[in-house]
Length: 323
Ligand code: SF4
Picture (cartoon, helix red, strand yellow):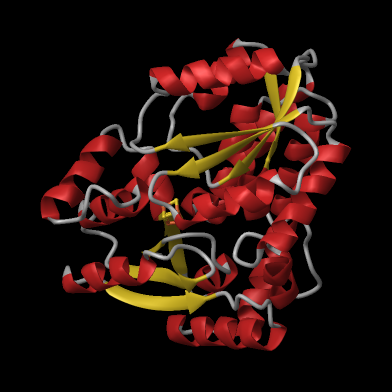
C-alpha cells in the first residue's frame, strides 16, 4: 500500500478504502530522533524563524522521506499556514490534494468534501463507510483506554496521549496498532490506581518531549487530553459525515468549550493546562478558553521540539503548588 502523508486528522477511512497507507507527518516529525534538525533544515531552506515549528518539522520530515510523494493537506479547519506549506511541497515535487472542514459545520459541505476526497483518491464514500464500520471496534477500545485513565486511574496521562494521538493514522497499520493496544490495556488493568492532582490538558499536542513525565513525577495525574481524545472520534456518529461533524477541533470554539467543560466536570479535574504553540493562530483562542471554564488555567507556550525549558518547569511547579 502506497504511503500518503497527512498534515492533520482527516477522514482517514477514505485513504484506507483507496488502498493507501496514511502517514501522519506530525507523528513522523515529533518522533524523529533529530526533530530539532528537521526544523533547522526547513529554516535553512528559507522558512522564517517566526513560524510554528510543527509546520517546519512537517516540511523537514516530508522532504527527508523519498517514499512519500503524495500528501493530503487540510486547507480549512486546521492550520492557517497549510496553504503556504503545500505550495512549498508542490514546488519540491510532491503531489498534493486538499481537504477542507467547513467552518460553519455545514453537513452538505462536509459531505461534498468527503466525496471529493474519495474521488481524488480513487474510491467512493460508500467504500469509506465500510472501512469506518470496520474501524469502530478499534475506536471503542481507545475510548475504553481513555475511561481507564480518568475512571480507573490506571493509565497515565502520557500513555493516554500517545495512544490517542496515534488515532490520526493508527500508526499506519490498524491491525498491528489494535494488537499493541490490546496488550497494553490488558497489562494496565492489573495496575494499582494512581492518585494525585487531577489535571486536564487542552490545545494542540505538546512539542515538549517530557511534559507528561514531568507532571507525573510531581504527583499530578493528567486525566484528560482534549485534542488527542478528539482524534479518536469520541462522539461517534451514524455515518462518516456525522462522525466528522462531531469532531470538535476543526470548527468553532463553542463546540470545543462545551466538550472541555463537560469533561472537566465528569473527570473531576482541578486545573487545566492550555498548551499553545509559538506563532500559532490558536493562541488567540486562549482568551475564549480561559473565560469559559471554571477551573484554574495555566497557559503554556512551547516553541522548539525537546524537553521543557527552565521557565516552563518553574511555571508548572508553581501551578501544581497553587492547586
Ligand atoms: S500548532 Fe498551530 S500553527 Fe502550528 S501546525 Fe498546528 S495549527 Fe498550525
